[in-house]
Length: 462
Image 1 (cartoon, rainbow, N blue to C red):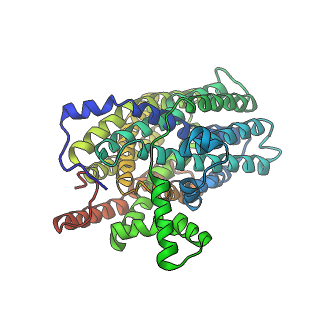
Image 2 (cartoon, rainbow, N blue to C red):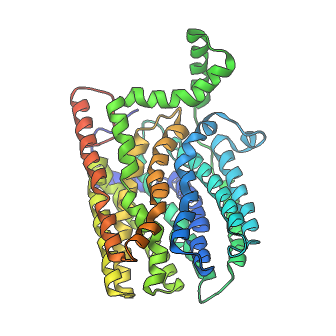
C-alpha cells in the first residue's frame, strides 16, 4: 500500500474537496444510511406506538447483527459476477442494484403488516431488509476505496468524509427527516403509507445508481494469478483453489501484511471504539419520547439539524486527519464523542428543554462525525485493493458487532437501572476508555515498525 508521507497544506486540502468522485461516494453513502431509518428510527417509533416494551424494542435491534456478520459472505462480492447484471453494471454496481431492489420490494411487504398482530412477520421482513442493506454496504465500501488509485491515499479521508456525510444525509437530515415528518404529528400518515413512500424513495436511488461510473480494477487478474499458484505450487484442484483464494487468502494476506500482534490489536480496537455511542444510539429515540419531546421535534433536531451539520463536521474531520494524522484524530474524536454523552445526561436531569436538546445535537453531531471519518479512513488504509470487499467488511463488521449485537441489551440496561437515564448516559461515556487505551497501544506499534523500516502504514498514522 502506498502512503502519503507528508502533511497536506490548506490549499491541497481545498483541492481534494472538489474531486467529483466524492459526489458519487456521497450518494452511495446516502443509500447506505437510508435503510437504518427503515428498520431503525421509523420501525422503533412504529413499535413504540404499537405499545411494545423498551426491552422488546431493544432486542428487536438484534436484526442489526447482520451488519456485524456481513464479512461472512463478503468474499462473494469480490469473486462472484451476477449473471446479466455484471455485464450491464460491473461488479460493484451490480451488487448494489440487486440489494436496493430487494430493499424496495420488502418495504412494500412491510407496509402490509401490523406489529400488534404479527411481530414475527414484521421481524422477518426487517431481517431481510437488514440482510440486503448489510450486503449493499460491503459493495459500497469497496466502491469507495477502489474509486481512488493506490497512489491517492491522501484522498481516503475525504472519501470517508463524503461517505459519512452521505450516510447521515440518508439516515438523518434528508432521508430520516422526511420519513419521520411523514409519520409525525404534523403530516400524520400511517406507518403503512410511510413504508410505501419509502419504497418509492428506494426506487429513486436505483435510478441514481445507474448514472454512476464503475471503478476500474485488476482484482480478477490478481485473483486468477493467485488461483493458478495455489493449483501449481500446492496441487489444489480447481474448486478448492477457488475457495482458498475467495475465503482464505484475503484474511491470510491481511495478517501477513500487518503481523499477528498488530492485526489482533486492530480487530479488538474496532470492536470497542464505538460501543458507548452504540448504546446511546439504540435507545436515543426511546429516550427522546419518554423525556417528553414530540416526534416532529425529534425529526427536526436529531435528523435535520444533526444530519445537516454532519456534512460540515465531516469535512473538518477530513482536514484534521490529513493534516495531523488518523491516530491523533481518532484519539481526540473518541474522547470528545464520549464526553458529549454527558450532555444527554444533563437533558435527562433537566427535562425536555429544546435549547439544551439543540446544544446536545450540535455537540454530538460534531464529535460523532469527527470520530467516524477518522475511523473509516483508518480501517480503509489497512485494506488491500485485491480483496477490498472482504477485508474492509471484516473490519467494519467487527465494528458493527459493538454497534449492533452488543448494544442490543441497551434497553435491558435502562430497565435494570430503573429507568435512570442520567446513570445510563454516564455509563456510555465510560465505555470509550478501553478503546482509547488500545488505540494508544496501536500507535506505539506503528511508530516502532516505521522506525525499524517495517511494512507501510496509513498516511500520517502517528
